[in-house]
Image 1 (cartoon, rainbow over the protein chains, first blue to last red):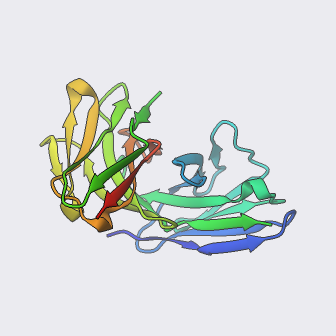
Image 2 (cartoon, helix red, strand yellow; image 1 turned 30 degrees about the vertical axis):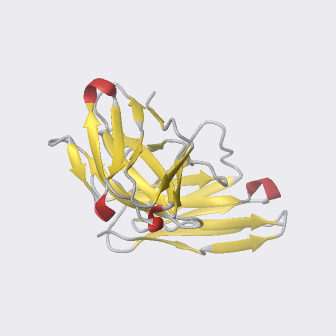
Length: 115
Length: 114
């Protein structure tokens, strides 16, 4: 089946720094990718839709200047958490659909800890 | 707006007992329906999905789910739970359309007693 990878799987950064998370579709092309955030013991919340070649679409309440999304190619989307703070510590998961209106394939997630 | 409700936050069952996890959705039409399982610190694994056709769908690891349109439900079942089934289970809906996102329920944490 289709595979989506994320890198890194875990990252620890200091408050005020920026961190980049990569999401790759390994054996298919994805014009759209989705970024989710999951707090401990909570569900996944959609943050934004990443669109190849155009601007990302952010969900209400998500700061676009803080969570920068770049979808530079058909197999790569990146999420950059800028000026990270401890409250940004979370589990970030990306996903990509392989066909129109069909299921999505999820990456393994990235655990971000901001100290 | 579409939404997913998982009424049970935490369920405990004995190993070998049967299991049913509830999921109700709110959507204008029949959505795509999914069940995922997540072990601690891990990503999501798809258990099963419903797009159309037979309303009883079989998934991996012995799980099945039944779509009931009249009840807007998509409950997950397993006849005999194994200790390795302890995890977090998420029901999700995805609208029929072009590459649209999915909405997740709050999740049900399953504990399995020996």
